[in-house]
Length: 293
Image 1 (cartoon, rainbow, N blue to C red):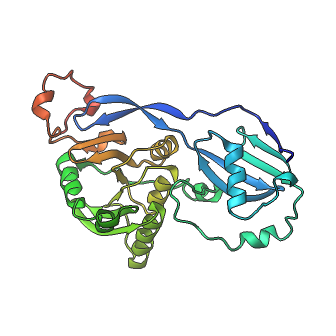
Image 2 (cartoon, one colour):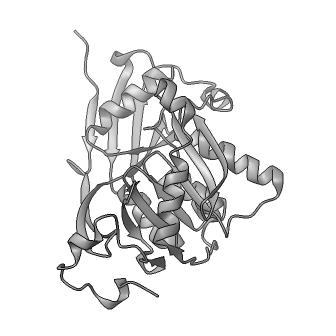
Image 3 (cartoon, rainbow, N blue to C red):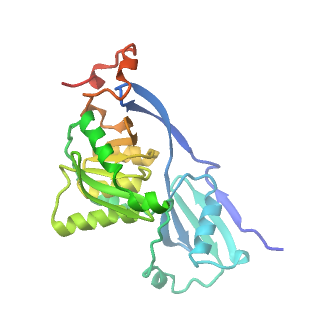
């Protein structure tokens, strides 16, 4: 019978959701729950392997599964302990297996198309410390025009599904659209394209079909784009980074619906949604979120 490794945790669990205030397409404020991202840096015999972004529900299983699937470990009986430390957001796996040459193996890595797994290292955040993005005002009518224009893309998704799409836009014009099996592949493609063309991002909007996670916010900030738009939702770390970096974050955007998680003051509500006439009896909202003329 296998001897299970000793699992040590500094906390039994971490927060998996949090409440945030958003602004909808009518300028009304609502409270929504968003998923929490937690960085978990994995060490194998004290050698740093990767930083995983996770909900944190079963971290020891996640770490062991990752190391096994990536071929770093094979023998469960050789594992002495798994230490999950949420105070330092780290997971240390100690094994008796031979890990000589591990640093050499880490030099050659393949990034898969999986959307749920990501990496984020301190040096990336360090480079973003001095990033300041412009606060660009956008009209609700322009946003609806852009969402309509985007419906004419996603050709691979319409034909086969199983892909994400991303776009770099200016007003209602889609400058470049790309689909890939992972949203990170798609955003990296557009970033490389902008870099090759010598383009800057201050007058652009970035659209993605995927979730607005910390990595998506970081990559858009690296591109210098101040507005991030998605038909999907946002995570806690994506939300907090958008506040820190000054990115206008608009999620759940489809048709005439959207939710502004950050930068509501930058949206000019000149349409008030598809059912504005039905909303006339709503309570008046704080002045900072009223329609701007």
